[in-house]
Image (tube, rainbow, N blue to C red; front, side, top):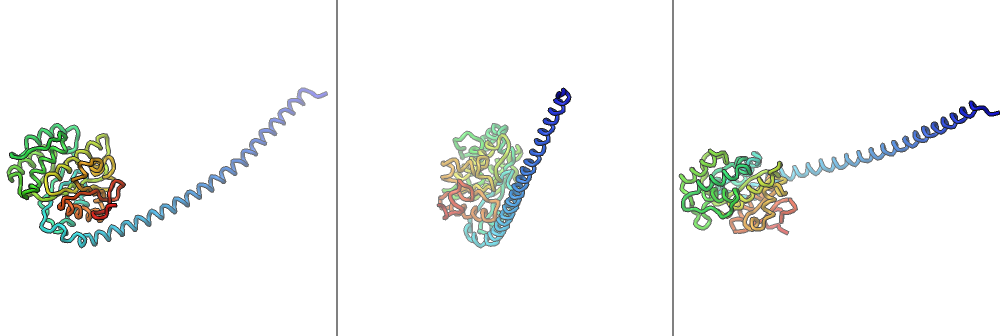
Length: 312
């Protein structure tokens, strides 16, 4: 007779066999799975190494090209701005190295730099927009009119255009030296600009900015610079807004201008002024402004061409 103990032992043996089979089967599957994952990981690592090598090669070629552009840049722009006067306006995020290189190139083109004005961070601060608007209205030189636009960028562009730029029709100043000093002094003492010696009025202007802005008010700040540059252009013989990499996107001043057909019809933009080639384009775009033409130049998707004369 089969005892209860025999049944228990048999059932236990069956379950032990099943458990052992599951363990052995899962071990074999896991081994194959791990082997496949290891192979895939190795292949991906090789792809990453290949792509990294290609990127390093492209970076080296770009560096070589930029050095070449830097070496021939003065020759390429020689005489383009002879006897022309230029004032430089920089934003708070403009790179000092880009500023210095651009100044050297403008001088190589024959331009006379009449001075420089730096816009402080508070100039584009939305929380100080009302204060800037009120100050601009009080500092406007006698005999000049502010633009109808109610935003601080346009209004400030109207004020600074009247003191930094010559009248494009008469080629004469629109403000007296005392009025210019009072306007810049008032903006400086209120923390909106940083100015040393008052620039003499010039025929042309370059507004040099950085790349894309960050933060909750990035778009608003970019819009102030964009509208300021556009109004500055309307005040003189020509203006170029030059930005670095990223300046042509939605949170960059160049990008804001390029989204506004009214602004792009008068104001030239360059989106790679942080490169030697881009700075050459800035000079060529200034020269084109003298002829009453404007363009969108650079490497971004919303540019019309890399330089004047190469659109399309």
